[in-house]
Amino acid sequence: MPNKLFNALMLSAAAVLAPLGGVDTAAAQSCPAMRKINVGVSVAPPNVVHTSPYVAKELGFFAKRCIDANIIQFEGGQSQTSNVAAAQGSAIVSVSDVSIGRGLKVQQIWGLAPRMPQAYMVPAEIKAAADLKGKRLSATGGGVGGFNWRMGRAVLKSAGLDIGDAQFIPSPTAGRLPGLVAGQIDGVALHPEDVFLAKQQKASLHALVQLVELMPLYMFNAYGASTEWIARDRALLRDAVAAMIEANRAIYRERDKVVPVIVEATKKPKDAVEFAIDSNIKNCVWSVNTGFDPKRTQWSIDNSVENGDVEAAKKPTVEQVANAKLAEEAMELAGGRVTIGNCTE
Image (cartoon, rainbow, N blue to C red; front, side, top):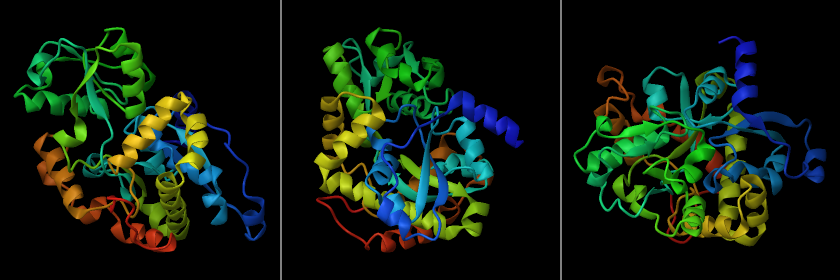
């Protein structure tokens, strides 16, 4: 796709944020040059789970490694602009096995958040997945084929229903919570901070299922880059991942320090952000190491083929999807493998 078209898409569908904090001056002075990189986040504004790049930037983990990171917001991890950025090597972004199976020349380089943090939220009258028949379900974050569409499909499937048994309503990701509260939709995957706010605004809303319980091996969020970029500048990608591994570990270990950063990035109330951080920490949502497990990657690939998202003849291998070696190099640079509480991925 021509660069002009890409730039236009970026301006219309993504927002480039100003840095939350300045570059670490001492770190920058020891660098021969600051290396620039664009780091995408999957939602505008980001959910709490997506804020590792902001923490890495604000706490100086990028600057320490001579990286000047520019954070870009996309309207859905599998949106057109996100896929274009991945394919062109314009940014590291969330990359799925589906994109790779469909021919996008990219690879996952680090699992930011292997486990899903979301609950599938519904109004009081929905007691079981079978009750979703004929209801209006969210298709935010990419429409058909996007994350919420896939999660709605999985919940329907658990009751023996398929996508034709419900109506999927597309909208911007910012419309997820207000749409549910206003009764415009009857089912949506909400992140913990939005679950907190939903219950505040309408106490009768409840979680039909925690998505990680429905699909425990689903690979939720992994950063990826074009294969050409990996070959051309592996060191930059490795160092950027190492900085974000340090950021994830800081979220677990230095909660009070990261709360203000995450509140500013998400534009959500502090109590909702703290609820989400505690929920994500308890459930080991953020990775503390590479974020990769071959069993998780294989299950996700098999699930995509089973659901028809990837043609069986084009089914990628685990090695084609996840560049575990690059992630391991970054992990070693960040101090090696660690365990924090019960969290090991």
